Length: 327
Image 1 (tube, helix red, strand yellow):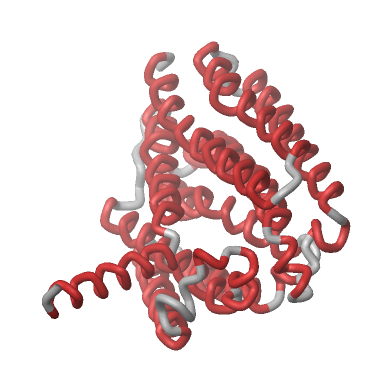
Image 2 (cartoon, rainbow, N blue to C red):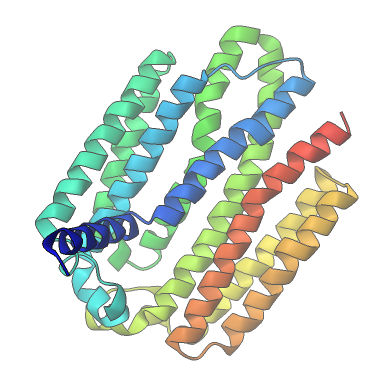
């Protein structure tokens, strides 16, 4: 094996480790969420009211970059501070300290955070909503303190991560609403209620399902968390309580889906989508959680729940089809 081949393998391993560190699949989901909110929810709803999106494609791209880099920075700093406990919870997946030096990880965090904040500030000022630039600085700060402190506090860390997950789709709307009001006046204010209702539905679904997944992941990692003094739900209240909380929250999500269907989208396409791709899998996860007794079982339930979250995201594509069909 020659020297060039060895260097290529080392570089490939490093790049692969870096992509795992920033959670590339999660970043793809974040980008898809904001794109689908913009083009499958906001755009067709506005078209029905003879309105158009006001944030330009260029500024939306800047918004995407700011969001993705801020999220990537959060993933990096989380692994940086979790490298000891990860050696117990997931010894085969430790990146910081094995594949990437801790000082390099910290440098990536600072670079991603800084560029994300600059991009977010640029978009905010160009869009005429400079106060929204504060969002990126606040989120970066929350992610730092989450990694250092909040995730070790009972439920607080879970709630913060879930709220930030819910913020991802809402950010797109936050930039559009002031611009729509400026462009269309009173009609835009009336339309705002409809847009907020739709986006809140997706944000609420993201919040609930992510909160359940956080509890399940804590159950999966409770051995290492207990050793390092984290006060997660499974550590503080036991695995039985964690199972009950996750099951009740999923049941609540199922109820809210049916209420949303009856109140806002009482068509058979939506009902079929909810039953096949959301409700049935949720019931399956409830059963999986109730029977879970080891790390592998909880991990399987966590992966299944991620499929449900992606299915909820892809419902936006169905919404565009439904809105077009009944236009």
